[in-house]
Length: 466
Image 1 (spheres, helix red, strand yellow):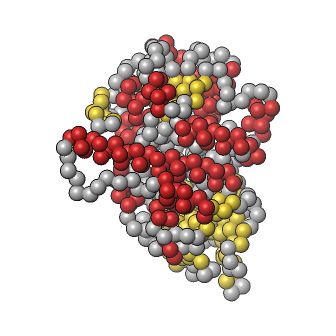
Image 2 (tube, helix red, strand yellow):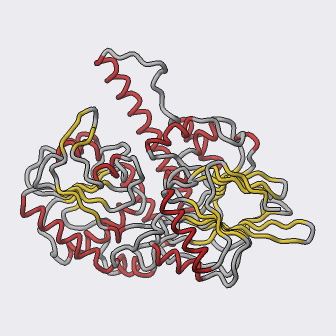
Image 3 (cartoon, rainbow, N blue to C red):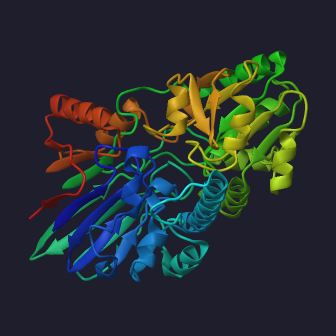
């Protein structure tokens, strides 16, 4: 049995793990790299020939876990992608949006190069196209939570609710050989407890090997109960100054969580009556998918809908559809809340709204999600005096702030709570999906406090678990 770390090793994005066991070769996730210094990896040949893979086991629809699937298919993968019904719906939206953005960005760069008279060594082409996504989706097969799914006589998998985003999963791989049984648990992204829409993360009693994320392994979030108060305060202060609250928004889960909190504030009149824009075609499609998959909701969300307080239809909310409607936002006067993708400002409409607002002292740039190192979002959050947006160098004069409690990731306490579920130590715990210093600190803390055998694998490191 072999386990390989093909991404998210000493970094946050690009999640991908290789499992060879029971006569099969599988990937757990196939994620896009989003840190600038690692972007070239998106173009590298896959470490494992795609045509040799039998399955991809997909934990959830975020692009850092799913975003290279169309390229894998383009390069020869023709096996099966297993995931939950909600993830299958969401990943179709996410991948099609990602392909469209890549096609648009490539076309924009080609036009800019032509205007500037620049020559380049290689033609500017998208990483993959909408046609590649269309070829990917027929390979997706849906599985339910909690029931074992047999891949072969020797290999089975079980998907458990990760509590991260709608349809997200932890995956337990069971290998049987010569009368011996071993299990590997892949945590995926572990969610927080008591969050809107999603159920609490699943706990496991035992595993021989654990591959665990550590995104927030060095810090603790604000109390989720304070999110509404913090958000209301930022909106009231910015509105009083005459500015806009601009929120880089992940279209999957974060946009819906924001609407959940904003709807409460609007219904309770805790914020001024002002326009709230969700300017993301993808977030609109994801919101519709949420409504299609209400069987995944937790009890709190079900009660809200039953009481007629639909968080996706509240006073002042406009869900923007067309590019013309998006441009019109910048022509409107008066304070507004503007949510737009992408969440780490790696592309999409958020860049246009930032370009209009980042130089305005009366406006606020509010971050509500993790910003990977070397992304534009991380530069702004860490206090850059000026940034480059859409080919322009712009001064940062707007107020910049963050609410950590929105995160769909468990913090240090939540990660510990998840580990507490295991009644005995694993043979090995592999710590991944965190900035190198964060994951190293988390790994060392677990070693010291629990006396477990903990590894901090490097990119493309392969372990023979036999």
